[in-house]
Image (cartoon, rainbow, N blue to C red):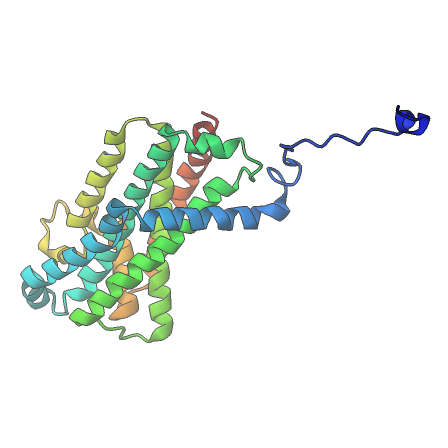
Length: 283
């Protein structure tokens, strides 16, 4: 029979086999933001590296485009401009890889939204800002890798850094600035639109920017009526800045112009991208 001591003994506290994670230090804490952003950045980079479409559009397509342009049009452009055509085609194809990779990333974002992955992340004790910040960080890493690969291909074809190593580092920063602005715009479109055709129209627009840029052919080769459009579009400014940092020539004016273009795109599309990403995550 049970004794008095056994009857009066306090019951052992019940433990929840499925404890709820603490939300106070996860969703709002600034302390957890860097760690959560790093984890999600790694997730995106691993996913992109295993996605054939992203790898083709970011690396293979621009590399093959550079080789084709140099083979087919290289000599004609060199004789027309007076300098090696690679100093225009290498920056141009690097930017093409940046833009096409951003479009591929937007398609992946749409798949994650439609598949419910963003909604599942939303209910986890993860910092709310880490999702969008991780995409920005992953885009920056992808842009740097894409640019380095294109530069390696360009060096193999004859491209050289005539202005020294510091100018080469500055050259690497131009696609990062341009690419983050373009990725911000594409992300805003992707999270607010349910139609993949709208994202594909951006891809078409980026192709038109390539053909009507100073990297495809020199400005003087275009008809006079279209020269102002070619000269002042953001991709031409970025190409001219990268050409000046590698071959020599004007740098300050095109660099200031592409910076203003990029900051303008970020200002216009950053808030819609953030609001749209939150809306897409909450389902």
